[in-house]
Amino acid sequence: MAQPVPLSQAFANAPTNRLPNYPNPHGTLTVHASMSGDSTVNTDPPYFSIAAQQNWHTLGTTLIANIPNIADPTHILNRETVPFREDATYHNSEGDVVRSAALYLLHPVNQALSSAQGVVIRCQSELTANKIRSDITYFRAPTAANPNYKAFAVVEFKKRGVIKDNEFRSTIKYNTVPNPQQLATATTAALNHVSGKESQFDGDAWILIKQAASYAINHRTPYVALFDWDFLVLVHFTNMVVPPPPAAPNAPMPLPADVGDYCELEIIPNAQSQRMRGALLGFLGHAFENAPAV
Image (cartoon, rainbow, N blue to C red):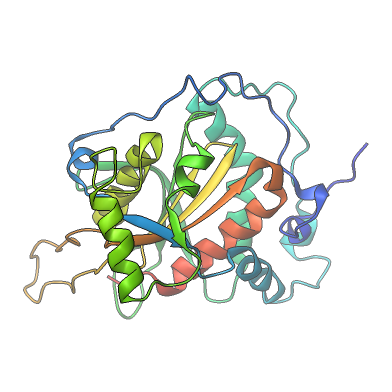
């Protein structure tokens, strides 16, 4: 029988950290994303994407290494272990994915992030902001810059088979930040895309990136993750311009006009699921430190 893995060791890129193997009963051709509301319909997607400029997994393992007293055997991350595979689980619905993710992905990540120096967070389900409901929203505790809890990241779950790897990867046009000529070339290609959607995003990826963009705009944060057990997609809207808060007290908080010309993507397949916890931890840690304060 496999040995229990302490949470402190659950973020390394090691075979013992793979997510449990659950069959996908739907395949990838019969399950599709759907528009979740008017906000998604009315939100413009980015024209294209580039490869993530941060190594999210490295950031996650670095965060673990820097947790105070992490070498102490009595530290909670050394005493708590990842649950063994739950044999009763069957991934028929999005809710089934959510339940498994809570056990094997979110809980280890939340325990680690909450153990980091100076990190106080809330992780809330089904929260509504500006009439937009997100599956999981992460909040930063009040700070000197903001007396209120502030959303810094969103994690959205999908039914197995909704995320199509090739649809997202085909939008990645550059491995580095594009220069003006490259930006113009990729934007022109998007505006003339055969789909008529004026974006390199097409198919289910077009709907999913519009949903992610809607969450980013309405929560005023550029960090959104998508997960369906088969893939973890980390979306960083680095070109989104977040307007400053209003000067007048009690005035409505202004929202970004859009998410910008392109976003950064990292797509991690289930075949590399041993990287998922570390990458999501690094992504959320970066969001905690860098998302807008207000």
